[in-house]
Length: 295
Image (cartoon, rainbow, N blue to C red; front, side):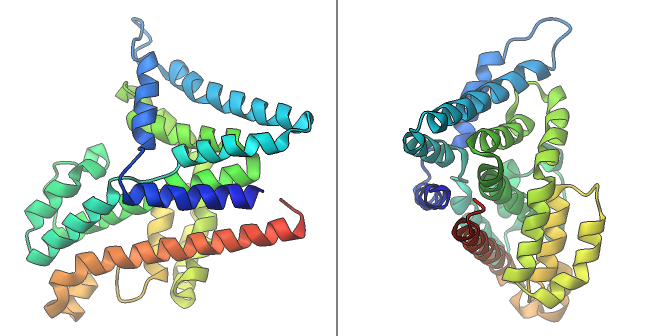
């Protein structure tokens, strides 16, 4: 049932993303407003933030445990399906990718930057950078968003249950949306701890779903870099797994200067295809675990 619940939630979530409906980020933002007020001397509000994430994770985990112990485990699956649907998803990104690719094709890099700057980390917004650096920054943000909202949630749901899935997604939300910016770096470090194993598992999957030979050339720096964050791990692995210099704009422009205006759209399409194939690999792996009785 774990496979069926996750697969159904994933399929529904992809459909909702296409329609740009039901944003999990908006739900988290509304939930965090419950702790927007802080007392003097406690401006960071870190304890309140952790409580707002840990409490629902514990309650959901406890509810599923009680249902399981009472012989009503089947009643918990609809709840898990609903929660997974809310936790996953990247609504709005489809439109951002389309207008960015169109602007790149026209050669209007200023318009491309305008469309995507809100998707980038706060420290990179408004910066005057080259088209190559802008594209790499946007590609990394997209890959990280998909990882955190699909692969990270799915990994912890399978490994630890719905409570851990909510906790992992909640830490990501805290790192991005907590009202008190001073606490966000601390939440980000906690989110990185939750992402350490799944990010490297996805890195390994890139090799299976992409160019294995290219991935092998990059794998040493990925797996030996214990302190590398999830974004860097995914970028390094994806760069090795993708062909056609999809994540090497400088080399692409030297080798195919006449096709430079198509680079933005082609690169993003290649990354999306790699992520989709990687999710298919994860689903197949989960099916094998279910068949073998491990899950």
